[in-house]
Every structure is written in C-alpha cells, then in structure tokens.
Image (cartoon, rainbow, N blue to C red):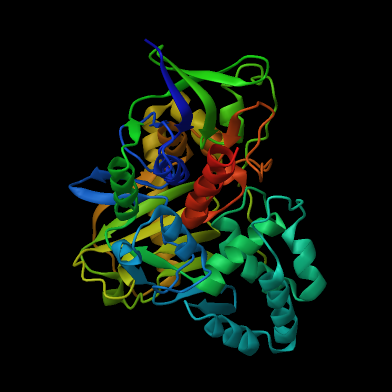
Length: 462
C-alpha cells in the first residue's frame, strides 16, 4: 500500500532537519529522506584514522549570548525549542584577514574590527562606519528583496578598493555563489553573522548540532529514512503528487520541500528536467592535518585566518587545480578553553572542478598523487605564514570537489548553490519548494532558519 504524507522533505542536512522538526511540531505527517547513511549534508562528519572529523563547519556564525533578544541564533533556538545551553558554544579567540602589508583583526566584539580599520585605514573609517549603518538598517531576510551586487553598494560608501577587498574576503569565501562579488542581501547576512555577531564552535563540533536536531525530531515522532535517495519528483498538471525513490518505492504527498539545491531539484522534477538552472562555479579543496602538538604550542593563536597573497582578492574558480595564492586556515583548537592534546588544522583552497573531475575519471593513481601535492602545498602555505613552526603530522586527509559531489550530490561539488536563488522558496511547480542555500539564507544558522521559514510559510500557513 502506497504511503501518503502531508509533506516530504528531501535531504537531512541542517535546513531539511529544521524544516522537518517544525512540521512535526505542529502535527504534520512528514518524512525526511536522506540518500546517505548519516545526516548533515554539506555540514557533516566522518571517521578516519581513529579520529572524528567535521566536514563543512569551520565555525558557527551568528554567535549570541544566552537570552540575547532579537538575534538569529536566539530566534532559531526558540522556533526549534532547543535550550541555548545544549549547544555548549565555545567562542573564538580572534581571527585575521591577512593581505600583503596589511592585517585586520576581528573577534566577537565588533569594536575590535572598527578600531583596527581606524588604525590601518584612518582616512576611510568614517566611510566604513556609514556603510555599517546602512547594513544595520537593511532587512536582509525580506523575501521580496531584489538581487543587486554588494560591491556596487560598498563603493558608494568606501573609496578604498583594498579595504573593500579585505572586508569582502571572509564573506565571499564563506557564502558567495557568485565570483568576485555577491548579492547584497546575502552580503548583509554574512556581514552581520560574522562581524557583528561572530564565531563560535559547539563543544563536539558539527555532531553536537546534528544530534540535537535528530533527537528533537525523534522526540516529535518524525520519520527519517536513510539510504533513501529520490529518483524523481512526480507531478500532474504542474502539481506535486509523489516522489519515487531510487529503490522504486513511490511515496505520495501534497507538498515537497527540497534542500537538494535549485538545479539538483529541478533536474529530477517531471516537466522541469530540461530547465537550465545555473550551477554555481565555486568549489573547494581542503587539507586536514592532525599534529603532535596544539597550534598554540607553535605560537599559532588565531582561530581562523583569511589569507591572501595578492593586492586584490580573487574569489573565482582557478584555472589550475587550486588557487594557492589564497586560503582559509581554521584552527579548531583555538576556540576558548580547548583542552584537546592533539592539534588540528584545516586549510581550504578554492578549486577547479573540471580539472579534478577529469583526473579522477581518467587516472585514479594520478588523482591520489595530486591530493598528496595539495597536502605538500598546504604545508608550504603554513610555512609562509609561520616560518618558524615545525610540524609533526600524525595524520592527514585531503578532500576535493569530487569528494564533495560524491557525498553531497551537489552538482560540480558546488558548495554555495546556484546564483538563481528563490527567496520565497517557490518553484514553478505547485507544491514544490526549496529550502537551504538556494532559498537564500547562508551559514549553518541561516540554513536552519531557511528550513524553519519555508516550513512555516509553505507547510503550516498554506
């Protein structure tokens, strides 16, 4: 007998789980379908070398103190009915944006960044402050916002291109689907979440968040199926009727909320498979290093470094396998009060999907050798920043755009989705909605808020 649901949620990542919880909370018959054996999607985890590793999550943005009103994190926890203390958040110490001859430092006190800009760019601090006031007044989550590019807005206020590049660098690499720029609404989301609110890390990493979501969903009686990839979203007269799983099973439904991504969702939807939805160009390659000592033992005391060797910041798909002239370097030990005896460094480069895909398809041995080259280049980058450090690497791992595509299902290993965002989540198909990155909210908190918003709007109110 065919099972029928009020709502089917595709994907047990952060947005999909949050949407599922919200729907189950109000008595909807909902099932969350996950093609893999674990939850998390782009922010998940794995075990290798007798060690647990996070994927995706460097830090949780949008930090808020317990009980702090009006903040995205506070709203999220209220909607999901999860106590703040259960996240066990550990704040960052400080992070840096490193360009040739200029470094800016920021932490969870915005005044630190303002003071540093005043010292490094004294003739432009008033321009920056006016820009910040405009950002604070802008409603970045309005579903009716039009798309316009952030650098065009920034240049109306700030007349120094280097300062603009330095401000943009962390925001682009932590969230932009566009090359060298981003939609202004998404820029404001990232500016507020990183600079005005700040970084923290749950004690236990991404597993902490996933387990809280899974426990909440289970307590509400929600149904979650693993290894349940969706083969097709079925329609009749441009209205969702059911989904067909990869094992051939058909599940009937009134609505589908998909966190797969815009192009991925439309590519399996009846009547929509010929649509040309642009796949974002940005993907990454990351090296994970386990060391015999903690980074602070080498005088590495920052939490995250946004490193760039050029005068400007080139956020774009490189022509080679990676762009080794810039990187994001995360030191998970360097959140306050870390007591892990083993050091951990995660170094991320922008990457070229086509080169990695061609190599893995034609020469597996050469693919593995290239991964080792990336490991060696990662050590060189670290040595450039910390010339006196000596690394005894106990374990290493490297993942590529191919890895991302294989384990997440995102076309081209694209991390930040399509440039064709659907802010209200509506697709051309009646009853089919998007949540997650391609709906338009960013970061882990933004992803979960996206799931909540789309569940509230399309699953509970309509």
